[in-house]
Image (cartoon, rainbow, N blue to C red; front, side, top):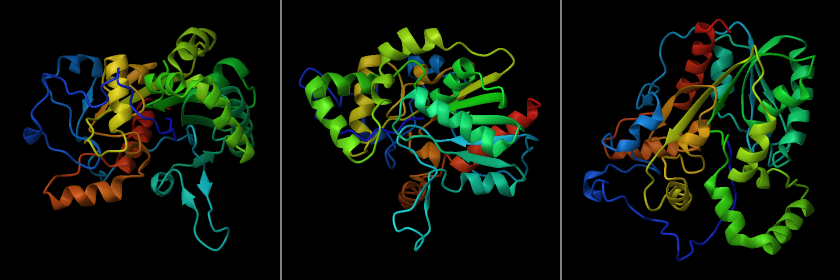
Length: 326
């Protein structure tokens, strides 16, 4: 998963709010807080693998528990816990409610912290150290992204025993939105932004590594999967409302990549290893339980039923891993 903090203005040559001629009229499309369900008649439905519409709408009574430790590692610009007021107020958790729900089901959970905007290599080094320190030699399943792929393939840590890696809306083939941002802002302005970020103590190595050229021509070529480790992946797709924070980025990715996406990562880029399916009507922020309370409250006012619960989703990943004997 990635989270980008850039803003941009659409250029004339790119119609950021283009609607497909096959799309339903606005009056026939149910809109929610930033997303709608994709019309089932869309011919690209075959690209989605298993279509997941409301399978994770509610938390089930029973889940099988993986017997192995589960590692949660955040994506770009993420954190484990953010304390804006020191010890005086509770911290803000990146995995809002997810870690607690997994722990309550009897699953040992370790949250690994990596540099929020460091390069893939730097984050992989920190991830390997964090897992080795916290897991103490236990066999683990990881839910993370590109840094985990690099750690497993290139670093090959001998003090970390990984059984599986599950990625969720991870840009394995890069993101057209990253391409657009670099093209729009330009090299000179990019360097100015980098200097500002570095002034505040943030690294900048991650951003150029999100481009399609880097991922497809460099990273994937040099980062093969490791034999004996299971690789699973999920993608997400939504049709945002015009006032959604993902309206512009979604339109850019849709036009440049020609495919469905969650506002930051396309479905095709999300697929790696055994693809478990596409979450429909789910945004990139929904995936980590950050927009649910507001979104579902507004939907309830219009009589809409909740179609996704991030906690139910992660509990089901643990259930899937247990089913696979992991």
